[in-house]
Image (cartoon, rainbow, N blue to C red; front, side):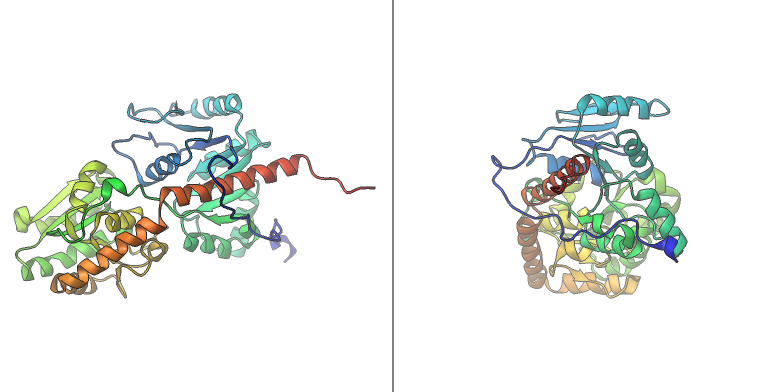
Length: 392
């Protein structure tokens, strides 16, 4: 059907990956738009705010302005501009953008806001930066319809190759615009020796079904009964939003008393303290994780990680996690018991994982990648506005 043909042609080559020294690299005036609800608090950041903040460090020479919601007084960064909630948000945002005159606008997560701003400011390069994937179309017609809707955007940035490739499969008409920019980690605050660990099993993540919280809670009694000298720390984020679902799964662990600690929406600093001492950490996600910064943080902290390996989790961990064939109480129990029974192997895996993260997921490396994407988008938009004319 001709109406389902791609709306964009693939580029002849991907945007180049050329490393340059900081004093020689281009300056790209960039506006970063956080989604509604993001207050960009330094003390209680969500994962996408952590990524933006971590990338900002190595890009301090760039002119960047971050737009977020009101409500936090601890941004601890220059160039942060706050917006009200409600109907005044978009007009104030657009006024701020017109005053700033960015070359690139990086829209984090929110499609509706990105499209509204793109329509209002067509002369700027617009990148949709997704921290999880876009909806898979239910039919060819949906794919065509969504492609038409998204086509005005100049690029789509995903936090893993797995998410990028899924988008390319679902939206072939936009495949040429899809890029991967894996998440970085500022590892220093997390670093701890893999050798000196407490007998603790740790989980840090949102208290929701996709994270495998219910399966993990069902697996833990068998471990705790078998190993009475081990403890558990569950650090469950967004508790208020998910407690109606999560609380019944956590409740059976109350019988273990002080051996099970449940932290509800704990500050990041408290999460670090526990992860830097835990011997074993888990990311038993049952959905295709876009990347999972919690896995990288566990590696940096020196914990041995058990992972479902879904989505971008294998990119986060490489060969340095104990991967589950499937996420069930039995497989989780067996994996934890295996690591408890083999302390030397557990420590060796944790040590290799920490080295992998320090070499692979550095802020400098990941920041250089996102800067290349911004520069290419700005260059392409300038070329679009001033195309080279053929002689004659």
